[in-house]
Image: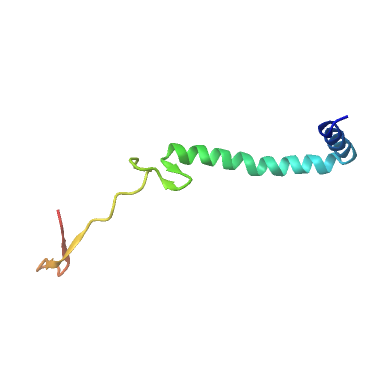
Length: 84
């Protein structure tokens, strides 16, 4: 028998000897893998990649805050006026 056959037999023997332990390992692995796969797909649709927002896409980010001119002040409110 080859190395892979021996390895396969060892794994099967372990599963037969420890069914609850094996089931717990499978459930924990799925609990980690499934949400990460779903979130990766959702964030990809929303315009994000593993490095952040994808260039050329809006990525559902809010528009930048309005810029104010701190040199001009409205005489009635003493607040800076909005640059258009």
